[in-house]
Image 1 (cartoon, rainbow, N blue to C red):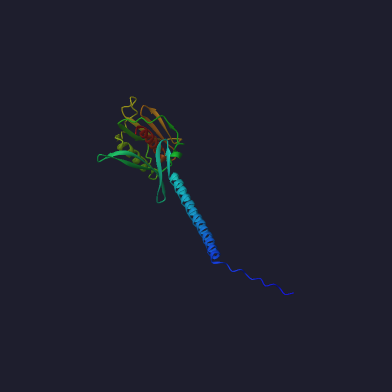
Image 2 (spheres, rainbow, N blue to C red):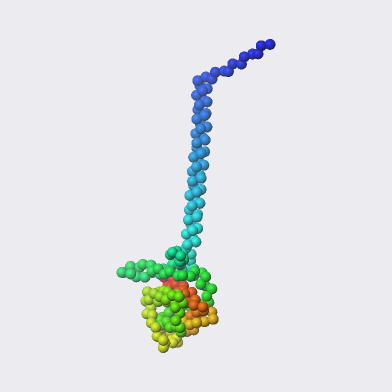
Length: 216
């Protein structure tokens, strides 16, 4: 029995146009999906970058007892920057201070009393706390802080704590524990163990920053 020959029906022009229209529509949909996914991927990457930058900046900036600090790197040194406003050439500008120790860790150093400095400050020491240069850095920073705050700093080996608080008095001395204790209206003993002079004086500076910040 002879097989019946199947002939393929030829598409009309209208059918061909409709088929092309459908193919083009599907192609556009596919391209739109690719563009959408591309933009979505780029958007996610941008958002992730913003989040990473935000957390990096958050890690570099922190606040301690109301005082703002910024972590900066100078060579191999990690410093903790803060600033106080000063008047320079008739304008208020920030004056930067750089601490060698993390203020949050320095809070472990005992501090008894509160900051109450007079217009004159006497700083004495029972011994030479050079400590491989740490003492020079620490004292210089402390003196700078008080001088730009309008406090006259002097050294007088014969001076003692003034019970009336006419002048402030700081006594640096060796101790069994690094600590700061107030023993008069504006008198402090800075006890220094194992040459921790930088930590001790920076602890005092931080308390001064906190008090100054309250007045701003």
